[in-house]
Length: 458
Image 1 (cartoon, rainbow, N blue to C red):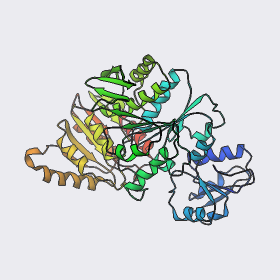
Image 2: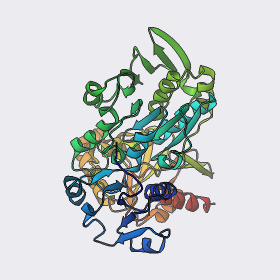
Image 3: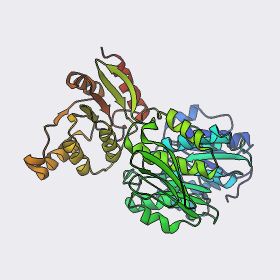
Image 4: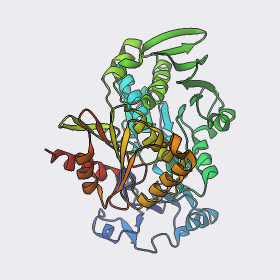
């Protein structure tokens, strides 16, 4: 628990969405010694009266001047100057960690490489359908600190938690969901082990009455299962589980206490792609923990079609459907997108480098029969092209694919190329398998650019 009062010298590192929400909370609670630190020099003109600023390249210097530091997710916890301040006695925390210390109601924390936002929204919608006072926040939607003053003991909070937000937690959510965990954000974390350790905070401070949901189909379960202090629930699309949710054939089931209940059919799931079953199953388990009626669970499953920029159908032009999957920043999510379609497919991929390995991705590209054209853009284009060339050599002619690989300058050019090559009855999917920062501010801007360009096609 952070020791802080109105006289404490407080720094907020980073003035993005979370930093702004933290500042608003502190000002509303009459803290009068606040400094915002950000490398962006423009912040000096955006501060409320009485708030100090440090900006520019030296914004992280002399952090030991402060009693408490709130670190925004985009600033590395292991940054040497932050760790030096910690060693000098400064308390290092974040708005998420502070929220977890102060929350008076059950919190459901969801983490994983991909699928967090979809799973959180499904859980929130199911709880809301049951009449719960559910609040959705964290890495999706509103920063949790923004509704801290509104929650009550009977509320429920659903938080999407990235590895960045988990590193300095000192309280774990009562309900923890860990989705697929692969090597993402290696441009931020030192290595895969640090990335896995960052997510351990979701479990590290659990109590015996906590509940954890793990996906049995992934190797990571062996890393996290021994750390669970409360009850373990499992989900699987490959086999039955004794306590949790799973898929058998074309049906989704929930199992608890030796009793099995059919929830719905796979065909009832409105979300596109079999990979989304991995998001639906944990939502079912959590909803059942709150005694949500099965009919209400199924209604949400049938009606929820997904979040923006996640295999989002943008438009159909001349018999070709265009999908925006800009949120796909890993090879795994791009492969899942490609696997979602059996129609003739054009894939647009590429972006800024996150240090990912594209060898498995390249093999999928070459062995997916319906994928006839891949258009590569961004700083990863040549790397991805080389991965495909290397994979072709390994596969040999007998296993190879007639897939056409094309490099283009930017997304607009790629869309025009896709328009020219797409087949009637087929699909064009932008699923980058890379970050966006080489050409766009973030994945949302990339997705909007895709939408706008597709809207102009005739």
